[in-house]
Every structure is written in structure tokens, then in C-alpha cells.
Length: 478
Image (tube, rainbow, N blue to C red; front, side, top):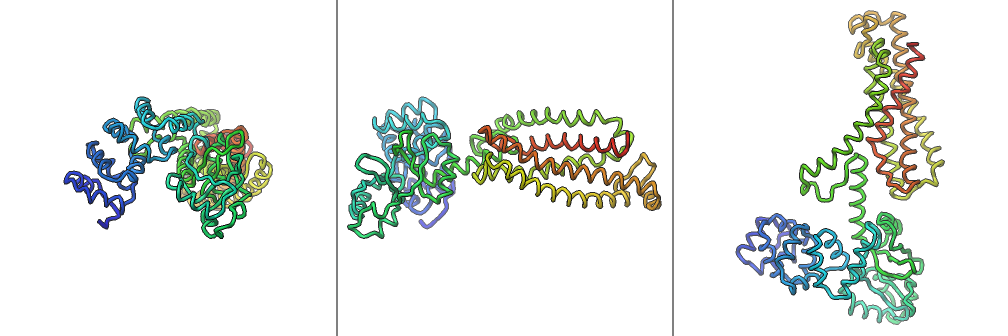
């Protein structure tokens, strides 16, 4: 078979027709994850079991890892202990731990009964590490070389033991006391002279992470130093595992999804979008919408305070949506930059004053430029009757006819100046608030993404309204 893609219908047909040879060849030309996705839509789990009993054991572990949790549970229930043990033996420990975290307790118990005692102890240890820490995502299958080996001896050792390791592209060099003394890249080893000591070619300036470090910090270390894998040390400084770059890709996807959800005030989904029921999605959204609705009460309260003044000069109400939207948009630009910079560790709370100086200058330039444009644009709107002041008895046709009257021009200048001035002040304050919120969250060790766009917008709305009506009180002398 030369197909690079397989559909559910195609693979189900091969299973129904018991085409064992074709199914085995399928795993040689189609990525395992694509096969897993095709199998996931088959309702009869016994057909999936047929695939497990048909293909080589070197493929079944990867296939099992890529399946959905509910399908894994069904498969475990249908497999014999020997068949289950064979799959588990082929899985890397970190992948197996990820599977166990998604399965019911009774299934976990059966799985643990079918792994060797030594490996069971390792799995239990990984399961007990703090969620989202380096310890919870690390693998314990890594390549170790003793520092007294030559390049040829090291290569021989890798050939003997490397098949069962998570990665051999980054190797760890230990001294006789089992202390980590360096890391060794496989390409450096291959091109070294056969009798050359690996201590001569290893990297002595390696970086490590602690077992309790947050997974996002681990991902930043791997990215910063362009690593294939990073060593995980316990509190005694002993090597106990490693985190590979493919683990980091999963972390980045998970953290990005979480940040985006928080920025839009949605609780992150545990499953994929298509696998999440409408009821569960509603439960994720409703609480935050209610919170924002309550916060919106403050905007309503400000409007109610100035209700009589709005009624006396109705044109003021016409510009309220513009003020609130523009302020929120301006702050949103800044808060996105702040969250990104803090997440990538480009800066932190210690850089607060440096960031404030930079953003205040930028905010002032932006606010003044937009304010000048707004003054001109709002004057044009009133001149051509796009927005009219009914309190002065003007409509569009009368306005154009009386466009040179002193009263009309004065009113246009006052209204345009008020709105433009409020926009200028509001945008500047919005950008300053957008710096304060995430930096403050980071300072108290909270996720900056929780200070999201909707929350920022609510605060900016209230601030803009207070500035707007405060200035209006001075200009129009209510």
C-alpha cells in the first residue's frame, strides 16, 4: 500500500475482510496518529482489538498512546493480562503515566498489576509529583554514559541499551559517584575519534531543571537554550529523569490553550472541542459571563448617576460606545504584549518601572495621535449631520445650512473636544492599567492570563465614563 492517509471506512473494510497483511503494511506507510484517529471513529471496540492482535508489538504501544481515553479503557477491559502487559512493556513510562491520569481508578489498578514491580514504583512516583511540574511530565528512560568511556565504547553502549530509551540524541555523562558531569549530543559522539574520551567532547556548560519546576518554566528553558532534552534533578541534585522536546511541544500547546481561554474568560476544556458536549461547554462559559455581568453593573451605575445630564445634552450618549470600545481595544493591545512577554520570560515584575516608562511614552504618543484624529473626525461627523444634537434643534439638513453659525461651531468644538480629550486620557489610562494588571498578577505568582481582555475592558469602561462625564461637567457646566 502506498497511501499516506487512511480513512475510518478504509481501515474498517480491511478489518472486516481480515486483510492482516494490508493492515500490517498500513503501519509502515501511515503515521500512527492518523491510524489512531481513523480507529477512534469505529464504534465496535472488538475491531480495534483485532488491529492490536494483528500488528507488531513495536507499533501497538504508540497506537495505544494516541487513542482516546474511553477507547483505551474499553481495550484494557477486553485484553488478557498477557496482551495488556505486552503493550505496557513497549510504552515509555511518561506516556503510560499520561494514560493513567486519564483512566478510572479500577482501570489504573489493573494496569499497575501488569507492570513489573520496579517499573510500578517509578510510575507511582511520577503520579505523585505535583501536577504540571517537571516531575509529572519527565521520562525515566534516558541514556547514561560513564565518564571513563571512549567514543567507541560509548557507541557500543548505546547500541546495547539505546533501543529502550526515550531519546539517544542527548545523553548524560555521570562520574563514578553517579553525579551528572556533562551532556553529550549524539552527533558529536559519532564524529569523534574512536579512542577519544567522552569527557573531551561532552558539554560541561549544560543546564538543568528541578523536579518541582513548573512545566512552563521547563519549556522556556528548552526553548531558550535550543535543547533536544533537559535533565531533571531532584532536590539533592541527582539526575532522575529528562524532559524531551516533544514533551515541550505538548506543554506549549496546553499552556497556550489555557492562556487564550483565560484571556477570553472561558475555563479551559479538558477534551478537544469536538469531544466536549454543549452542556459542558455552557458550564465553562456561564460562570465567567455572570462575573462580567456583575462587573458591568459599575458601568450602569456611572450612567445612572449622570442620567439627568445625558438627558440635557443627548449627543453625549452617542459617543459612549466609541469611548468604551476604543479604550478597551487600546488596553487589549498592551495586555497581549504584557502576557506574551511575561510568559516567555522576556521581562518580569523586577522590570516594572522600565516597562512603565516605555509604555507610558508609547501610550502618550498613541493617545495624542488618536485624540487629534478623533477631534477632526467627530467635527466632520457633526458638520455633515452624521451625528446630531437634537437639544439645539438641529437636524442634518439644518446643520449643513447653518454650518457657519457661531453657536453651531462652538457646539461642534465643545463636543469634539470633549470626546477627543476623553479618548486621549482614557487610552493612556487603559494602557497603564494593562501594564499594572498582568505585572501585579506575576508579582504575586499568579497567571497573568487571568487578568484578561474582558476584565480589562470592564475596568476601562468605568474609568472612561468617569473621565467623560467629569470633563463634560466642566465644559458644559451641568
